[in-house]
Length: 134
Ligand code: NI
Image (cartoon, rainbow, N blue to C red):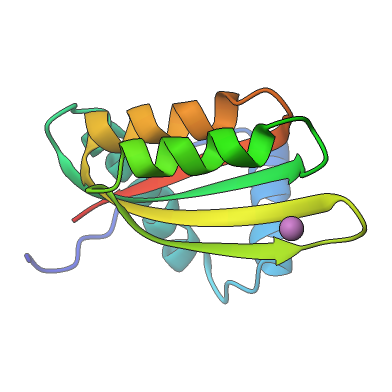
């Protein structure tokens, strides 16, 4: 890792004010730390778009467990991708809604394929995959 460099950034005052407000709400003590995180996230997103990149991913899905055969289909997806799936956590949210968090490792292509099957299962109300390079 190289030394620290300083650089100037020009931007619209309104955009900067909105950024300052948002990072203050998020608890950042200064712009530099927030900008570093934004840049790291931008670079990570590009890295994990490479299909052969080795990644760790977390998929979160929210669903209604009373949808016919949905839980069976979600379990089957996890068996189909058993080499990628490292753990699954399930929490019952109310009388019928559940959230499941699945942690996977493997190539970006494998992790994305498994995540898309989970998120795309009929009855999954909301799902999201977050990946980071290993
Ligand atoms: Ni449940």
